[in-house]
Image (cartoon, rainbow, N blue to C red; front, side, top):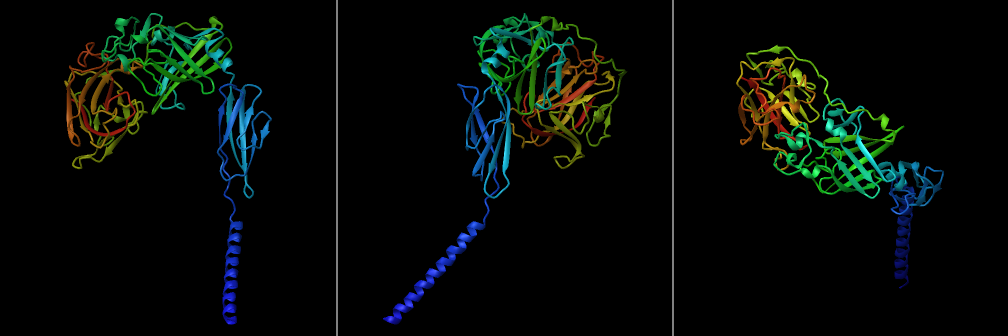
Length: 501
């Protein structure tokens, strides 16, 4: 028995020793693993009942202590503090997150503290405030994004669209919003294309307010609606069918050719000497509209509206070509239709809304190289600006070969539409107000198809019935549009043999 106890005792203490060693090694390993580097991060929310009170929510990682600097001389070491500022203003808040073994991490963000009543007074005055489109410099425009605002197109007070400059938008402190069309309305092409109201100022009466689809849009005329203003986010929301500011078709997250029940936009107000400026913006995927309005405390500072458009550009010399084509096989495969004249840039990267590449492999795998048309945005035409006014004496048709891939997603707003556009751009800064269009819809996919149009029979465009290529003498602009207009859905297409015969 004695030997047996000794044997088991020895085994017991040996096991204890092994466990102790394991425990010792494990603890030692834990002590040697340093904590991960801290990451500082936070979000904030302004109280809905006290605009000076801000709740900071800490989203830092790998940290054990925190130091807050609220930008007003006050600090805190709480994890997620609530801080009360003493006055409105812009404050840069800095959070420093620490742990025991690493370099501290910092995160800073500038926050704007606004008195909602003071902010509302800037928008709506003590009782009301009336805004009109700013008459100095650029007043509205479109671009790819906020950084590129108004780079694609902009409007100035130089005689174009004068009715826009007379219209008034009044915000009242009782929450009402009043639009006065001043008796005239602008026929936005996105709404009125194909009607007598397209791209002109017309009499603002219900009988004229019928859009391209025949829908009644008279709710956009003068009327009283409601508004709310959230100064912490600079968001204005208009409610009431037909309430609008900017462009009638501009909506909260998408454009619409009929009146909507509400719309929201960002509004930023600048105080000037004798007047204030209100810039509103609508941000969409692939494009950005913004508009600048003015409200004058000193009416003498407001410029007059220019109602006569000054002469634009110059009359180009005439040519009467006997051939005019481009195969897009190489940069030199053309007659008259030189890709170096693609408007406004080159044939390699044409518009903000599309890209075009010459000399890519035939997608059918059997022919010469062709042109690749990548649609990337709302403004998607492949545009050609000629150096001469083309006389069409020798041509009766225009055609283009199109390869329409079935791999494109046509379930959204991307269409199978094909359009050739002819117009005048050297003496018109808005060619889309003075053009003819020839339209077709592809029914065959993944094959080359030739689409041919009679030059005397355009199918759309504001100048249908006004002129044809045979009767006009100043046409110098051509474009090819694939996939339909007015949307940002992407698509890839191929073209070749754009020619007049």
